[in-house]
Image (cartoon, rainbow, N blue to C red; front, side, top):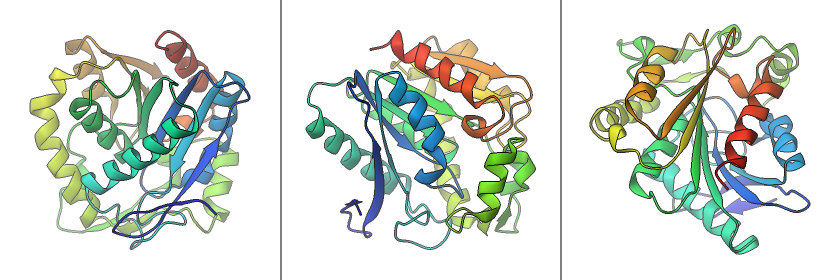
Length: 255
């Protein structure tokens, strides 16, 4: 089984290779997920000639850590750095795309701000760009209703029966890191220079679309594609094919 080395411990990763890749996506998942829930998305990218590399973040999937505890933003970014280096060695010269979902989207945006020349483009989904009310109280438990995430019965069944997926954990570590990120994004996100696509569900009850729409109106490199009826896990919602096609069209114009 492939693992990335990190001082915090080994981190499991997956690589879905295209037959003749034109680009490589470096992907960071969100809370309660792991790389195994993205097979459908990976196959859609592969059919379009795009490699997907993804890592189980700390506290998730087959990687080290307490359940739901990503560690720090910097540690997540280090995993993405190592995965990027691995992808670059595997296929030298391929254009690189940074992508993230939910908490992974926050880390991805900070990476694009800090390394604007490393990636050709960025993609984010379910991005919580402003404070999430449910994470601001004194109760540190974090328990998601699966119905907030998706209406796709296949995905909901996989969440219920997948021993590596979960919807509840101590939310204190996540809230701590998001709070750090929100302070920085308010000041720095307008400086975003890398072309970035945000795909977002209009009905996302966790990371509501208003903040993403407001930023997209102010920041020229940030594009928003909203999906009516879409919930938080937009890459795995009922319109996942349309979402994947939208991302691929964007990448085709960027690579």
